[in-house]
Amino acid sequence: MDGIAAMRDPNSLNDHVMIQFDGVIGEPPTAESMYCVWKASDKVFTGSMDCCYKGLTAVCGVPCALMWGLNFACLSFKSVWCVTPCVRMMRTCVNSWSGIYNTCVKCVCQPCYESVGAMFSNIKVTQE
Image (tube, rainbow, N blue to C red):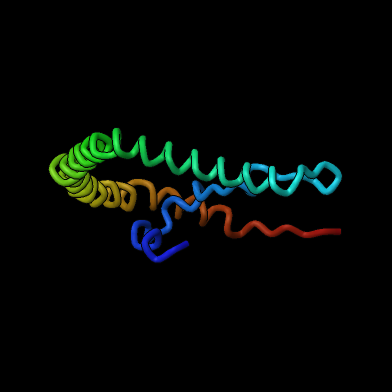
């Protein structure tokens, strides 16, 4: 990867689309074409892919950037102004109810469990 490409994808987000001719076309030793055909095919493949990509980015790059910018802006807005306050409110409510729940469990269930545990605490199992 050259220096310019590294600067455009510093987090290696798109390593999976780094496609080269020999990663798509591979001839086994028993079925090799002439060397000049292989090299010409490599040049045509690389050139057509490069030209098509540049053409598509020239036509669609800016509109796609606008669309994705708007999508991520909406996502950020929803997260900051809707989701996070909702989660915060729910945590506050759950925190209040957890205190009441813990008190009820300690007052109602815990004595019952302690009594049942005391009843079975003297059981001894022996093997003959």
